[in-house]
Image (tube, rainbow, N blue to C red; front, side):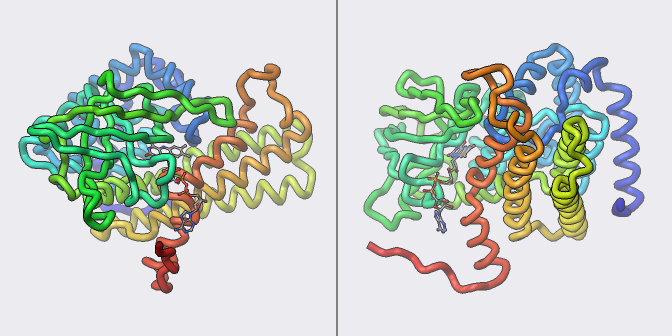
Length: 407
Ligand SMILES: Cc1cc2nc3c(=O)[nH]c(=O)nc-3n(C[C@H](O)[C@H](O)[C@H](O)COP(=O)(O)OP(=O)(O)OC[C@H]3O[C@@H](n4cnc5c(N)ncnc54)[C@H](O)[C@@H]3O)c2cc1C
C-alpha cells in the first residue's frame, strides 16, 4: 500500500528520483549496504565508517551540500530548505530505494541543531549552525552519568561561572561516537540550591580540550562504540550556554523530543531487508520447513509489516500538519523490543553455531550473534523500554502517574 500524498509530493518524488539517478557517483551504492537496520554498537557501524571514507562518499556529500540536502529539514535561514516531514519521509524513501546514503550530521543535525534553532540567540545560531551543516563540528551527547540516565534531571556534573566563562567538572558515560566527536553538548548543574530541574544548563564544549579525557567501553558484541568521559575543569565561553543559565532542562527536552521522534516512516525498510536475510539463513541451514522456525519467521514478518503500516499512519498524520505525539514512544518501544526478539529467533536458527565466534575467540561476532547481542542496546538508549511505557501510559492513555520515591 502506498499513500497518495497529492500531486505536489508526486512531482517532488519524481524530480528527486531524476536528480539521484543523474548525480549519484558511480559505485556509491555498492560501497556499503547503506540501508541495513542499524544496531548501536554493531560491526555494521564499522563497515559503514569505512565506506564513508571513500572519495565517492565525499563527492556525494559535496553535491548534497550544494543542493541543500544536508539538514534539509532545517529552516532556510539556517542553511536548510525548511523541508516538511512528508518531503523528508519521501527523501528517505527514495534514497533508500536507490541504495544511496543520506548524509547526516549525526547528533549535530538531529539533536543540537534543533535545540539551537529553538533556544539559541541569533548570534549563537549564526555561529554554530553552519559549522554543523559543513561537518566542521561533530557532536557527542554528554547527558548520562554513572548514577543518572533515566533520572536525567539529577545530573551532578557541575558548571561554575567564572567571569565570562563556565567551568565544567564531572563524569559522563555511555557517550556514543565520542571518539569521532570534536564537540560535546553537556547537561550540567549550574545552581545546586534550586529544585533539580531548575538548576541545569546546556553547554557546548570543545571535546578536544586537554581537560577532557575519555576512554572506550567494551560492549558484549565486541564493539566499543561508546565511551566514559572525564571533564576536569573544561572551560567554555558563556556564549556557548544555549537557552541561558538555568534553562538547560527545557533545552534538553527539545533535544530528547527530536531524539525520540526517530525515522518512523522508513524504519521498516532496513528490518524488512534483514528479515529476508534471516529467511535465507534458515533456508541455507535447511530449517525453512521446520514448523517452529516458520512460525517465528511469520511472527517477524508480521512485525515488520506492522512497523510499515504504523509508519504510514505517522506519515498520514504529519501530512495533515499534526506532529507525532506519544506515537514516537510506541514506535521506539515496538522496533527495539522486536529487534531484541529477532536476535533470539536468529540464534535459534543458527543453533549450536550461534555459540561460537566464527573466527575464533577474541574475534568479531557473526552476523546474527551481533544482532542478538547489540539489539539489547536499542531497548536502553533514547529512553529505556520502561520509560517509553511510562510515557505511553501517562501521556497517551492518561493513566495515573507512577508513584515517586521521595527522600
Ligand atoms: C548504545 C547506547 C548508546 C548510548 N548513547 C548515549 C549518548 O550518546 N549520550 C548519553 O548521554 N547517553 C547515552 N546512552 C545512555 C542512555 O541514555 C542510558 O543508558 C539510559 O537513559 C538509561 O539510563 P541508565 O543506564 O542510567 O539506567 P537507569 O536509568 O539506572 O535504569 C536502570 C533500569 O531501571 C529502569 N527504570 C529507571 N527509571 C524508571 C522508571 N521511572 N520507571 C520504570 N523503570 C525505570 C530502566 O528502564 C532500566 O531498566 C546510551 C546508552 C546505550 C545503551
